[in-house]
Structure formats: C-alpha cells, structure tokens
Length: 155
Image 1 (cartoon, rainbow, N blue to C red):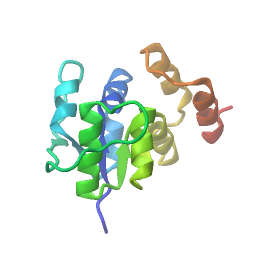
Image 2 (cartoon, rainbow, N blue to C red):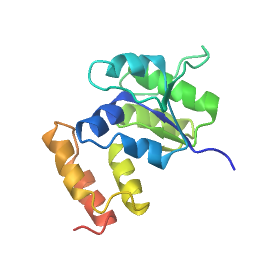
Image 3 (cartoon, rainbow, N blue to C red):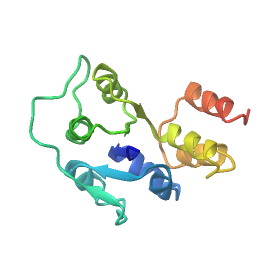
C-alpha cells in the first residue's frame, strides 16, 4: 500500500497550531513533509513536532501559473509534492491551489483537514474549530464556512 504522504504549506501548520489541532496531520497521514522554506516561515509561531519531516525538493524549473506569484514556501511545497508523488498537498491560498490543479496535484486546505478528521472519527464536530480559526484571524469565507457545516451535517 502506498503511504499517505502530505506535503503541507505554512498556513495549515500555523492555523492548526493556533487551534490546538496540529496532531490531526499525524493522525490523517502516514507521513507529513514540509520544505525548508515552510519550516523557516513557521519557525516563530509553530514548534514543529518530530513527526514533521523537513525535506528540500530537488532544484527544477519554476512553478507558476497565471495570476499572482506564489510565495517561496508554496513553490517549494508544489515542487516537493511533484517529486514525492504526494498523496495530498495541503494549501490554502487560491493562487497555489490553481497551480496544483494545473499540475494535477490532489489538494486540500485547513478546512478540508477538519472535515477529513470528522469523517475519520477524530473530531465529533467541525464548527467549534471553524469558529476558533476565525477567532485566530484565519480567513474562512462565508461560503466555505457554510459549505463545511453542510458537508459535516452541522447546519
């Protein structure tokens, strides 16, 4: 069986840390990998547990798509996901998701992780965690919030 490897961007690490749910990544995936640029980006706000593996992607061509440019961490996450043939890329920024789509990479975001945790029985509800994300300043659009509650059967 192929291991379920997640290559994770900074926003999800920071958000999950802020709501006390960083451990969900370890429970949802066999392996959690981040590039060095992401490790550097989160170093002030997240104490990375030992199960998060920092790995650099091999240098290759640029990763881009029409629209706003990607941050270094997002570019490295996508490059590393392509190299590892990742099971899932965890990205929250729209521009990075557009690149993932164009490259055929399966992705989810922080809200998607909460929904996966509920489906897996790791969380009883997602609403308290969605609300905690909002309180922590994480941007969750009204439509995304409502769709998440509907998908979680918590309307």
